[in-house]
Every structure is written in structure tokens, then in C-alpha cells.
Length: 512
Image 1 (cartoon, rainbow, N blue to C red):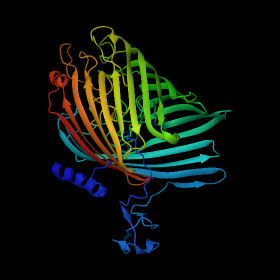
Image 2: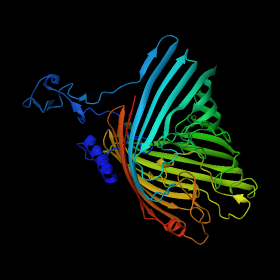
Image 3: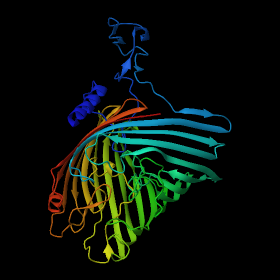
Image 4: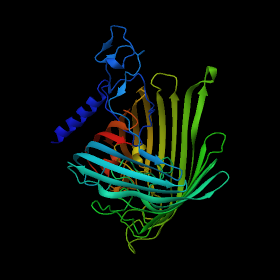
């Protein structure tokens, strides 16, 4: 049965992409492709002799004009659909939805219930509605029905959430200032900060990540400032048990508060400054509990290299961010079971890319370095393991989703090309080490694994990712990827013995 479903998914991706012969990809945060439409791409099109203005070169072939001088010869096989909208002098609104199918075939991941082989299918449906009164008050509601089936290993908390409300909030414009507006929002919502290094909606997961509470924000000419106080809701957030068949409720023991500010007034680049305060009042074994303050900054932008005629020939991209984390913690997991530990930790991330804009396929190369600190001495009163908050690790630390950002160093290089305007191919290589061999290896969910020892090797392993994205039209995107993970001595010596890991996936996302 596993073999049959695997073959079907591969066949489906091949049939959809027909003339390219390359598996597809669908946009959950791994590759940012140029999705502008191409008038010369006739994949998934249909036309007849009546569509031709006139015929030369012996007329039309296979129902389509043989010469590109004719008009109206590329009617989309799949029509593009916009959200349903309405507007008058007082009210405006929109209604839409997205549906995603995904097939995964994985082996020997560092996941709960593993190691092992599992092939499974996932569906996710998200209808939404939004209405705004007088450009001042907005109500938004979005539902979710996410299911997983056919699995050999137990499903994860991010795999299933049936018939629930993903977002619902009221947003009110409370002030109009000279250079911007101030809004207040209350309800269930998603947060996205630090290019998803700090907080992410986790669109890659089948259930998203959401929070419930308050947010106030200012959007101005040079400054954007968000302030929030929220509680985690669904199973994609750490330490929360999702109610897959009943209404989700926020985690009453935890608050996530903070301020995230963006300044665009610099001559070159953009600067972000942030403070996140995470309080967990219910101890969880071997997880962050207590309270931590994360103070950080991010500087990012692009630098164009121009040639003759002031035309941009190449583009440098850069993104540097980091944070320190202080506070107190009881990492041993229960009142009275261990000392109150002082937290001193942090992370640093640097990304550099270079794109050749005028070369065929617009090739890009990039390099990434990431460090999330680990704890060198588990017997002292300090805890130096960085709690990586709520990121999208899938976008940065390998698409196989083996590792979180705690006690981890990632050296990575990659490349990206666009053989067609709608098609993006990406490859990336990772070298993963522990920052401190005395600390655990932490998986993508932040769970500590293995038996650390000061004498063991710190090399976790290497990963190679291959990803393809095809933008059929503004509604439909396809994605496929394959990953190999070769485990290092830190895994084998730490009691996590297993064969090397692999993963294949195919997904299709349709939204309007």
C-alpha cells in the first residue's frame, strides 16, 4: 500500500508538469519564486482555430496556432478565480478559501514515535470571510479542517485539527496620526516576525500556529510598531495539546508578550528591533518554563549592481539578525524538582545571496550561518540553551524538519534558478553541529533527544534538499521536494542509532 501511494504521487506530479518533466513545488516558505505570468508558456492551455486572427505556416496545429503572432491562443485550462468581494460607500468585504493536499513519504526522522517509515496524505481546508465598516472596523473569521490519513507512525500535533476556528478577531482603527494610523485588535490571530525566525504562522504544518489575545499596531511612513500580549492556542505551538475534534482553547498557563518595531528610514537597508517576553507558569519536563526575555535586532536589504544604461545586472541580498535571552528557568520539569536556573542564551543568523538578474534563468547563490546556543555545564545554576520561540525552521534548517534552533550550528550553501518564469528549482546543503556536546540534540518541536556527553562528537549530520516550485496561475501552486539526511557521530554516540533519513513530498495548494 505504501508503494502504491508513493507511485501515485510521483505520477501525479509528472502528469501535471508534463512538458517540463520536473516535480513541482507550492510555496510554504522555502523558495520565493518570481510568479509573474508568461505569455509564451502554453502548458495547461486550450484553444481552437476560431481563436486565431489569421493563419500562416499552413494554419493551426493541434487546435492551437503554430505562430506566436496570433492573439488569444492561450486560454487557461484552469481559470483564475478572485475572492468574492463587495463594496459600497460604507461597507466592503471579501470571501475566499484555500485548500491544500500533501503527500509525504519519510524514513528515520528525529520525530516523536520514530525512528521508522511512514507514508501519509494530508488535506487542509481554510475558508475565510472579512468585512470592514467605514474603513475603521474590520471583522475577520477563518476556519480550518485539517486531516491526516494512511500513516504508519502516530500523527503529530501539527497534523490534524478538525472543524475549528483558526482566526477570528476584530480590528479597530483608534487614531489617525500625521504619518500613520494606530489600530487595536483582539481575538485569535497569527503573528509573523523576524522573517519567521522569531514568530511564524507555521504554514508548512498542516494546522498552522495561532495565538489568542491583544495586539496594537502602528503603520507609518518610516515606522511600523506592533505590541502584543497573547496565549498559544493550537498544537503547532510548544506545549499545547490540540483538541482535534472540539473547539481549541488557549494555553492558560502561558503568555507571550512583546514589541516588534521596523524602521525603513535608513539610506540603505531596513532595521528591526524587538523584545519578546515568554512566561510559562506550568513546568514541562525538559522544556522551557519560567520566564524569558528575548532582546534582538535584524538588519536586512538588497544592493543593486548596475551596468551600462543604469540597468540592474546583479543584486546582493543580506539579512543579519540575532538576540540575547535572559530570565529564569526550571528545566528539570516540576516544582521543587530542581534549582531555579539563570538563563543566558541567544542566537545569531546571517544570510547572504547574489542574483544574476540579466542571465538566463536568473541564477542565485546563497549562504547561511546560524547559531543557537547550548548549555556547556548542566550541573551549574545557569542555563545557556536558547529557546527558539516560535520560528519556521522548515525555511532555514532543512526541509526534512529534523532539527530546531536550540544547541545547533548550521553552515549552509544553496542555489536557485528559474528555468521558466513560473518554475523555480532550489538546492541546499547543510552541515549541522551541536553548539555544546554536553547538551541535547533538539528536534523541530524543541524536544531534547539522546544522552549528551562531553566526550562525544558534536557533529549531528548533513542534509541535502532539492525543491521545485511551479506556479500554474494566481490560484494554483505545486511543490515537490526530496531530502537526504546523513547522521553524524553525535546521533550515533548519543543513543539515537538509526539509518540515514530521507523524505519525499508533493503538495498542491489552491486558493482564492
